[in-house]
Length: 58
Image (tube, rainbow, N blue to C red):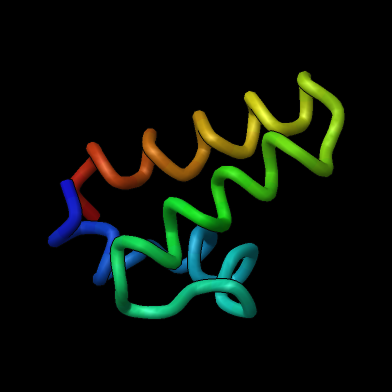
């Protein structure tokens, strides 16, 4: 999982590149911030996008 997070797909990189740092804690913190700041639907969609790409080989 985390190996793929460190090598994100193009669309993943374009969307999350600003917040993306090559460290798992940063990704977790970013996910928590998404849950806290964005409405539930957007937060869920963002998390599905993040972890969907993490589970899918590029």
